Amino acid sequence: MKGLFELAYYLGYRLDKRRKSKSAKSLPARVISVGNLTTGGTGKTSLVIALAGFLKDKGYRAAVLTRGYKGSLPGPALITPQMSAREAGDEPLMMASRLQGIPVIKGADRYEAGLYAGTLARLSNGGPPGLFILDDGFQHWRLKRDLDILLLSATDPFYLEKLIPVGSLREPLSAMKRADIIVVSKTREIPDAYEKEIRKYNAHALIYPAWYEADGVACCATGAAFPVDSLRGKEVFAFAGIGEPYSFRQSLMETGAVIKGFMEFRDHHMFSRADIGRIKKKAHGLWIITTEKDIMRLGDACSGEDGLYSLSVKMRAGDGFYDEVLKKAGI
Image (cartoon, rainbow, N blue to C red; front, side):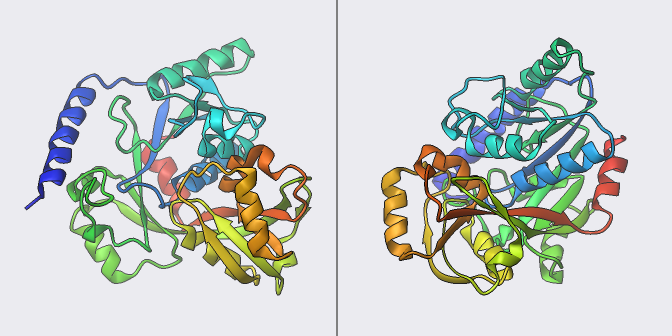
């Protein structure tokens, strides 16, 4: 039995889904949606980056369509690395910084964003996108898609969650049946008990593990790059303002770094120079390490801060994942 607040959310969700699904539109190319069932912390941005990079390497002309959480640009708009997180949103800015040569289009209406991507391509004398990746698209009812990839986090027992606002579920667990492929992030091997819970709601989707691997360190002030091995045995102070800071801490520990202190901020926190001052005071002269996503929100606050670094990570997926994406998307 749902509580009063859950029931109110559920009724609103049903009406919203029904209204928007009736007017759903199709773009003139295949659409792959990457989304989640809960609010944040599953790694969908990292998977979008990995998937877009793979498709580019395979010769596909892809474009990423994203909502751009908290970005002030009204959209549709092409996101460039020169923008600020306040304009673009931290996740779109991170994607644009990592996906050179792949358009990242921000817009609340992803259908309009897709058409805008095609217009930009024609104006630049390039070919139109042959494929769209819909970021955070599992609940975007206005746009039809050819493939739904659903992310779950191995560190979050989704089956124990409740609907917003009591819990973190955006939809009832029964919505999992829409997924064509399910990715369980933050693990190299999916526990049998976890997979058993998934199968209660989706019996047909193939399930793959996915995990983060650190692949570089960069100085915030200068952009100078260092190999991950430079952190082995090094004492550092770390901070993060992401949905699940544990995953960053784990990735940092796997580099061999010795974490002497750790500060957590709320997800999408916009950092100020005062924040950096407090962090430096706690770090006591140690290297300060944060995530790529947090660097997007530091902006001018990290100007001249030679002791501040970011750890870049890549998401790896289990064997056969990309082949299955190509097959199920029909590309």
